[in-house]
Length: 277
Length: 224
Image 1 (cartoon, each protein chain N blue to C red):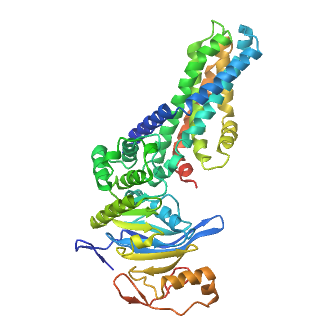
Image 2 (cartoon, chains in turn yellow, purple):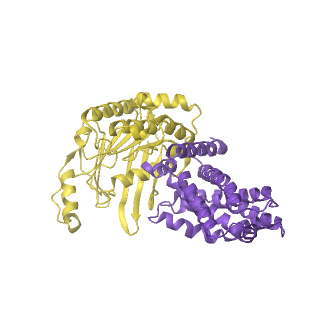
Image 3 (spheres, rainbow over the protein chains, first blue to last red):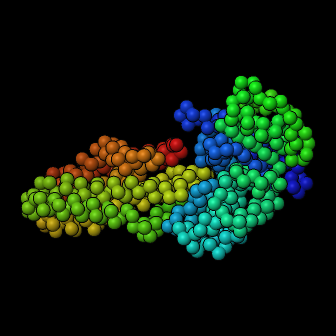
């Protein structure tokens, strides 16, 4: 079903569509049958405890890892297609910027990697959006954690992606840096960029996230606000069931109606593998 | 984005990093100097000795130095996982790897240009030696080591014992090239024998492994 764009237009192709994505490291299943879609200009909060598979999922969508099974399409182009990689940017724990080079030197090289014709203009535009103009001449090794995050955000925005992935973007940032990053993200979302944010500090984004996807042990145990993928139980119930193993034993608590972003009740069940029933 | 411009940018970036960190060149020169100086203590410097074993001695020093450069070729991308940034981009993996080949080659060539005169002095090289031929052999031999070595450096990049794995992978595959470079150098030092067969072998090795390396760049850089 076509999704409403912020500007009122209709767009048939979602910014991101994951179908039955699984990833094994050896025999260890880091991610199992995760399916969802994210429309343009929307924001998805990716929740879950440590080791739940959030970073693995983000790295798969960014093209840094390949899924063992399943497919990922970005703006209608399936990974690892070149067109898909042009549409996505990942802000991770690692900045992917070489510490011995200045921010501008790093960005100029990324400009080459993404085939950007007017790299200086693109760098200036991305730095302005990320609020990192004053950092361009500094070496990455000289930057504080908050500054490094801004430099990494500039790198992520350099090629003007339509989907931005953020892996724990607020970790180890002070309040001022968090506020600044949140402001940048709000502006990006207003510009029509789809955002997918993995975080433990969900109170920072819960008021403006459109969709919630909760992973535990590599499985999507709960979804909220995802079109056609609504769930019927509260997040806490799913977490408790997954952690205690009651779900597998069939001893979970009775389902309770949950409210999605729009305040609607959704009662469709999701099985432990995250597949719609 | 052209193949050539990305290759050149990768070379420029690597050389800039090397100038700032000096992590490869200083170690390369140190190892190579150590080999040449220790051998010069072990053997009396005389022309007859140089003509007998000079080719082998020279390439032992070049190989030691080269290993350091090749280990750093992809190891240079490890801080903040810069290689993942390349993998997430739509850039040509072949162009990236070609840039790495070229920067490794240049660093090895600079080290060899410093070592070669030192070798001539310490080992009392015969005045009849054909230095043009020795330089040509060094270029072809270094090309062989740089292409293969960079490829295997990429292959072993995520291995825990990366520095140990690289020579274990590189040297067996490079045996034909090593024999050719030592033999050709020996011919040019002594003036006895025919070098052009060895040079043809070396050139063929270079072309085949360069083409193979570039064709298989996706495979080795996407390996997890």
